[in-house]
Length: 359
Image (spheres, rainbow, N blue to C red):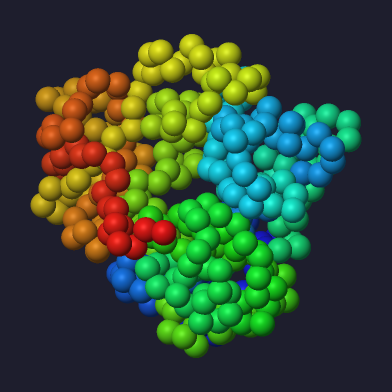
């Protein structure tokens, strides 16, 4: 049975085009990808991300257990801070990428398609005294993203929005509704992710839209994250890839002590066989997922994510290629069963928000 978020009625009212995604009926877009992604880059866009999994870990040994399950060093994570990290298999394959929150309790936000897998992965390995809880249905999640996001939150009463550090967590009131907010996002812009009671989410949504915030769908979110060079689980990485092959070796703290996958990652970091690179399509070329990447007639890899960026004005993509087979500036062919075209290997990300907009 397809699931619906607490904001499903608002999506219908706004005329969203709804699609099935990871078992949920979600808005793909309301107006156009061009308009919605431009709002995120220039002012503010609002995303319903209540389909993401929200898990909590309780018990005296919760911190130590979570430390043993992720690649990051949670011992260095201050209270009221979040951290982007990975969970890996014993062989180093990526189970999921997630954000860990150290608030009143330890919690994680995981990919929607991996919620049940991650829940089972953690629960099956949790020691006595540690409980893993699925709180996805207990908390709605909204993402307010863009250079105006924090100022708009202040206008609605969340006065600490502008002073939250990057990846900081704060509790307060927004439009009269109690919230927990983190200065995080998946668009490459400044912004907040808002945790709120499901029955309060529609009111929060309405108040933000009344201030002129653009509602945005999954399509604009995907374009924005790709412009920012952010990886997508199931496309750019999965259980058959390791952190070093997808440019996420920086999340791995091998010196922190034992954790699941550490021994394999010690070996894998020395000679990763593949690498993730950026592709800028030339002319009318749009790198499409699955298309072969060829260098001088030899196939060296394949596109993992790709689309047309209206903001940048050209096709962009990420590709997994044989390590060392291409370098930044190299010309490659992108070939699918439909067509082929030229692309240039570029440094990721494609887009960085202006320095003045950083917290």
